[in-house]
Image (cartoon, rainbow, N blue to C red):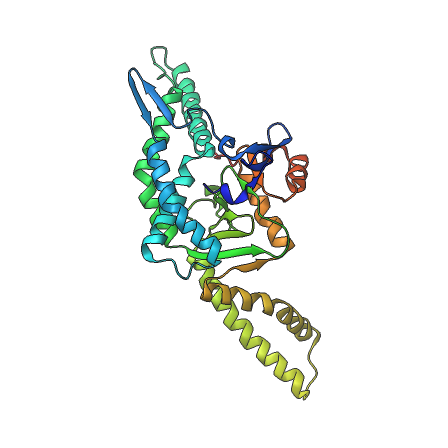
Length: 329
């Protein structure tokens, strides 16, 4: 459903999107209904019983669709009521666990457990190594994860600071793992990526020209504290400069120039937080956000009109960008 705003009408009237395949270095145009539609991705066969979660997922998308349209149309989340915010948070929480990256991480964990079990078995002649989970059993793990964790993850998202971004020029990419995360804080060997990790920043494009960011509340507190300190320092240095009773030192002049250069962005950020309207993303910020989408995508990156130059540049620079994020053991 997040893909629809990225689509355009093709010659045959079908909605189409531009796609880049990181595995094959190939870009192509695909019909919307064919994009990321893995065959039987959410279906399990058990003897005569078929388990399919597409039905519940479609119902959730039907509830979230008008909320997303409202965000895109109004360019603000100020008018979202509590029920609409909960619906959107629940929808995003499910996106967090339903995608191909979750399947890959589960495979990674299962393979690691198998490797440990085999290593332990070598030391014991009569030790048995449990059989690796089948593909359907691993699917079942994802289904269970969606069922048991969605509400908890949604609650975590509701506690974040919500902020909209729109590009000054260009468009946002959309990866097959749309909730891309970043953290500037160094957590050492424990890692710094996770919905509940202090300092986390989450970015989810909801249209080529609109993105919903969900930040750890501590970042907002730090921003407001820094804004107050900068306001006081800027006022003090500006007053000393105006009075001219004593020339500013080189350090003070540099500090004043820096504060004046940063002040417009700081004011715009505060205003966006207060009014719940989009903050303009300059070229550097757009590149940063699109970089996160490419890095997080397991395989596919989508766009409406934005060239895939950044994707190609990243893949040429580091081969690990051809896949999504991985667990570290």
